[in-house]
Length: 137
Image (cartoon, rainbow, N blue to C red):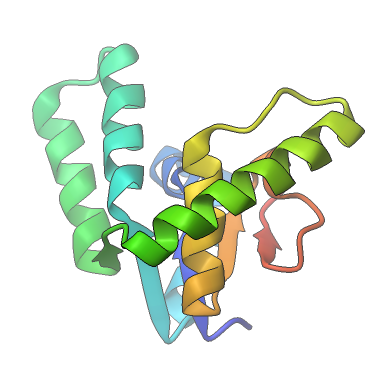
């Protein structure tokens, strides 16, 4: 079990859905000693829920649960540079795998994990087969 984890939006959304992948994410989060969520993941989740018509009160409750269950991290100058490097790495891997290019958010999650020497909890295909990934799929 990873002692230190970074939770991606994919994992939080599955957890809130209550899916099998979400149950696995919940287990990993509970067992981890240190749990981090990048601040932009909160915005990414809020955007998804607003797009789907979820009421704002429910969105706020879920975002609060995330911030109560993990340390919310902000991007640093170091993380910005690492994010750019991770983006090009993920983009190349995506091209090789024949999947769409990753978002900059994906690269920022990976950069956060690398800086914190943590594992990424996700089922996002852009992270599949990376050493840092705790795969939910």
